[in-house]
Image (cartoon, rainbow, N blue to C red; front, side, top):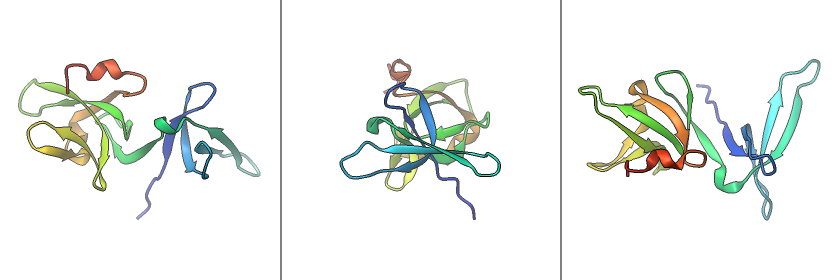
Length: 132
C-alpha cells in the first residue's frame, strides 16, 4: 500500500502556501522541501515555513477531488436534507476528523463524498464564525 505523505505550510517571507515533504531541526523553523521533476536530475527547493501553519495531508479528497489537509475548512452537505455546516479538519487520537457537537469527533472519511474544501483557518477564519 502506497501512502501519500505530504505537508503544507506558509512560506516565512512571502506567506504563500508550499506543499511537499516536511523536515524539522531542533531550534529552527520547519522546512518544506519541494521536489520538481527535471531532467536529468530532479530539482529540490527548500522553503522555511511558519510553524503554526504546518498541516498534514489527510490522504482524503473532497467530493470535487481536492486534497483535504489538517486545519482546512470543509462545508458538509447533509445527505438527508438541505442542511449544510462548516467545520475545521483536525487530527485527533490518530485520525483526521471534525468536532461534532452532538457526539464528539466524526472521522473525515465518513463525510468525504459529501464535503468540499472552502478554505482554511489561517486564510479564512471568518468562515467558522457561527459554526462553532
